[in-house]
Image 1: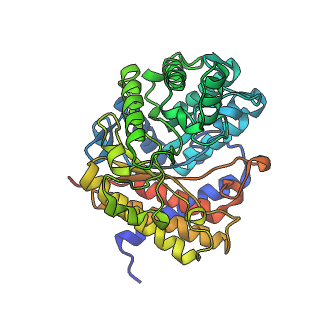
Image 2 (image 1 turned 90 degrees about the horizontal axis):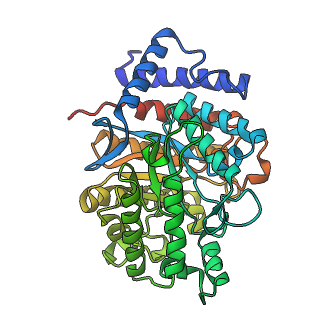
Length: 432
């Protein structure tokens, strides 16, 4: 049977990914970033590394990301726990192993958190303005190790949810200083919580990395700053309060650090600016954010979406959830191109092993569908430039799992799909 160019590419990707899987199976800790590659592959990888080093900061140019003026497409994953594990030298092997694996997969972008507010479990910010140097060193370590492997980082600055402190901790800190705040959502409007948060932004962005000697605001390894993980504001569904907060905080980030991109951390819910689009929200649900108006703010560089149809559509069939995701992506890709004229990143997607009807095959098919939609946008010159699945976990992190984790060494078929997509999108050359 004759083999066309597309089939040759597919076979090449399969062989490459099988080689990766054999390497992962042989050892959880691989000795070098590109061990086992041929001389030609090493040379090509080295040229790409040099190109990216020369390229500097990632930018948004129209609906594309660029590095050094050239289009940049990426795939990768979330690993929110990297700073936490990096803060203890005994746990740093998990960071090293995970970033080694990311490099071998061909992943170029990892999203993690630059917050852990209050509490006693390795906090970053112990109380307002008081920081745990060990945890900051953990974040230094993560950025330095990512830099060695030419992996970009998206760093989120606070959580909407109570885990790791979040907006609730900021509100409690304000209450401790005599402010009467009735709700966690007062985080977005209270002057003291805003000042606490802006101080945190400045402290993180101006931090000088102990391993590299480079201030975070001057570090090209950082792809973008994220204002908040999944902001929601149920007390004002008009979206006006969120619009004001994003305008204020994105401008403040830019005033401290004009080098880096800023994104909000939105899940993608539509709001009142284009009411007709709310039909794409799961069950017409609104959360006080507005995908269109929030992302139109000039100091926001690109848009994001998350998607968890198993959570948002409980009791629905697998088929209905897949159909929802297809429409969710299609509507946001269209709006990023036409309404926003900015790039779009699928910054969280996953398939929980605790959902009804879960099988590894179902998860693999779901990942395939998401990746195919992203790649179709890339091929057509569209705005969707990559996807980050939720989430990678290292071995021996069983206490951290809750269904969405992908332990690469233990997930050969899923890992092969991820590897194929990273190779496919990483090797794409646009025709201008």
